[in-house]
Length: 393
Ligand code: ATR
Image (cartoon, rainbow, N blue to C red; front, top):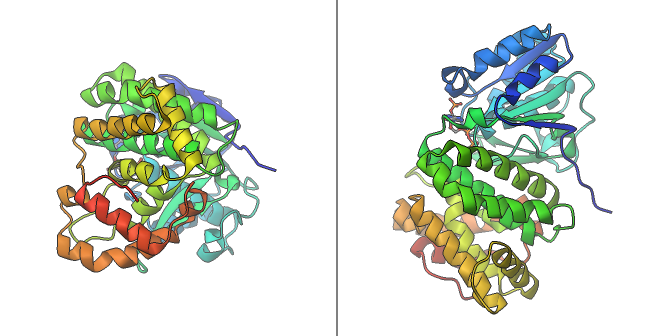
């Protein structure tokens, strides 16, 4: 038996933030990041809509990018004191992910972080509050997914929490919030969305409910990301929906090794953080080449290429056309073609890559990749990506 879970209600369209007015409850807490929602005026709007609904409103501000266990615990403490019956998370993936974990600790103060790290082991939520998610970036789709990524900085590890209990109750996908994104954020989050859809489509858990969402999301990213990147707001709106379709696909079909590799390299090098979407964009073409040695995966990549009307008369030609299209997109969006070009020093890469490869193979996303991989092959794959060369093994 398989399962397909998405939020109970999804409101979308410009101005749909207003839906907050119709929520039922007496106390609402709003969880946001570092200030973009305030600057855009969206935080004030959200507060006044919730007050219009008759709720007392409290704010938890300042969730950092890649939120920490400590931030989650501080938020949960505030919730325990304030006792909200509505949790509203608004912003990029970081504040929404943090709020999901706060929610679990608010409802179950005795639960430990280690308990939550066991996949699909969450206690029943919604005994104290419902959860509303309002994305302001067009990539993570955390507003519709069963996932949250929290970083334990003491251990230097990113923990992906996974359970359908943390799939939000209500998602509000209002493209107005995405209009203020700078171009680089548009590029990175957009390629994150593309990667979600491609990995979900070839995942070993793919299926009839997620395939159409994944294919349409890929088509929309190819149609709208370049113009959204240039600042066209109609395209920006379509990208906001495309990433949400991709999210519904991957929350249920899961992902593959592009994400395993991005999770384990994001914070691994001294030279600087590799933004998640940028890492995905750099790794995706090489992973498609690698996975295509598996016949079923090759056929599925060819399906994608056919769906978006790329040229090719054999599955292999179609797969190669897809790889080229993604590499061309990276050029267009100013994304480096290799880890070397990104600026990771060669000596640091050589010193760390064996350990990173081992960790990447052990990542939760590796299990649903269409081709299995061992640490030595993972290292070979990383080396090809470091140099930006094609993969033929
Ligand atoms: P992601 O969705 O990639 O996980 P994030 O980690 O939540 O994104 O946010 C990344 C950066 O994008 C943050 O600096 C965030 O600013 P705030 O912390 O101040 O909110 C910024 N950001 C998110 N949405 C934005 C928007 N619509 N306009 C401008 N900046 C935005």
